[in-house]
Image 1 (spheres, rainbow, N blue to C red):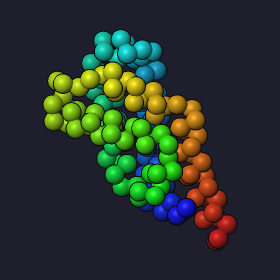
Image 2 (cartoon, rainbow, N blue to C red):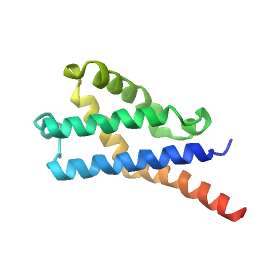
Image 3 (cartoon, rainbow, N blue to C red):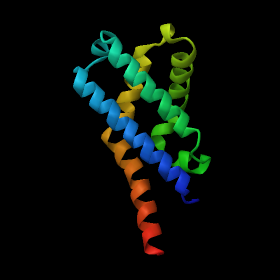
Image 4 (tube, rainbow, N blue to C red):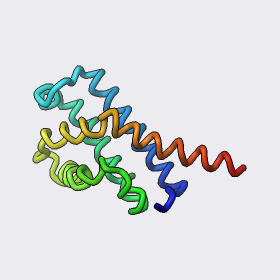
Length: 129
C-alpha cells in the first residue's frame, strides 16, 4: 500500500477538525435526532457548510489513501450530492442525508481510523529525522 502524503495528512487533519465542529454544533444546539436538525435552521446552515468543506478537502486526498478509508467508500457520493445541492439548490437539501452522513462521520471508529493515519504518518516521519 502506498503511504499517505503530507498533503493527505493535512487534509485528514482538516476533516477531523470539521467533524469536531459538527459535534460541537450538535452539542451547542442540542441536536440528538433528525427532527432536532430539521427544526433548527441555524444548525442546518453550520452543518451543511461543514459537509461542503469536508467534501472539498476530500477531493485533495490521493485515491490510494481514500481507498484505505472504509468510511469514505460509502460516504463519498452522499457527501458529494449533499455538497452540490447545498451549494446550488439549498432549498432542496434533504436533511436526512445530512444527518446520516454526519452520524457516520462522527462514528468513533471512523474518527479513530482517520487519527491512526495521521499518527502513523507523523510517527514514521519523526523517526526519519
